[in-house]
Length: 461
Image (cartoon, rainbow, N blue to C red; front, side, top):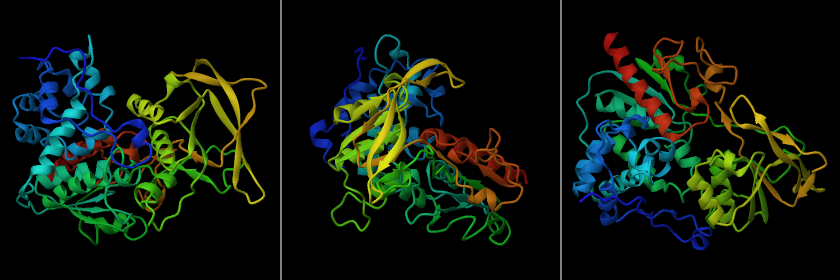
């Protein structure tokens, strides 16, 4: 029987007062019974609008139908025809603005919990799988992928399935890109990322870590000396932005990138960690996106009183609604319509406060959002001893500065067409390296699209 409930099956999760003191995963996942019950809410629409909302075009109604029948492994096979990282996507994709936004059930109630079902299917497969997929027959062609983040892994996975010899070059000591250094353990356990990457290795993908393209090896060398017939640049956008206000060089001021990397990649939250991080009492996180929520929730887990300082209102926060609600539940204080003017320091040049002003919203700007305007005579001091800047990122200029014939945008992004083709022969690019900071699934979609274009390029050549 179809489930005509207007509400999703709720996601089991740790209680807020418990989880804000540990780094264990917040969401606990559906049981088989909950997954089947939720899957029965799907109407299996003829036009399948949800598929059009998925950047990698998973056949969503088909996999959900298999879940409803209890055919979980068949559901997994359907998902992995389109997605290389289902356990990751089921956790961190903004389904509410993509596939679930187009779900017909959302017209008169809540949409089907597509992301939760994808996570359930992937987790169940990973827990029970006895062997990885068989390695495809080699086709004799070589492709290099720069960066092991979402776009690079998606591109590598698609090409490996077609028999290409793929080598992924990663600058850090661990593969995964933003999945391992940027997203906290409580949202995306690193064991999940490692398991997904092992699945790619089983397909024949080689991953070389501690290699900085542009320093260790150049793209010229990849194409000539090493014989790679095509190169995909999926190096992401890891260069942090700052406000340019006084005091940003004081001790206790972090970029969100540094703060999260110390915690996620270097495990600074562990007592035995060799990577130090300040155990602040009062922390201000400047910004309102998902990265700001991640940084704020990490700081809370260190026992700090945490403020999210954002110059627009609560409704304008660009972060996912779920992340904002989780942050509120965990005790994060939102100082919206507030903008920093300067960071204050003591005699040792350590943070001892932040000067802020109140804002109000005026007419919409070029982005369509109402422009924040400073209120006169509204200056005040926020009592903090640590400031984390979560203002976005841009691509690192190393690759463009060491690669001739590669066109870039004024802000640093690589110029690529809709298929990922760049101005340089045989070089493709996608994800944050092209668009600037965006979502995991959009980066994966770009990697998948580029893989198709690389295949066509090499085969035609």
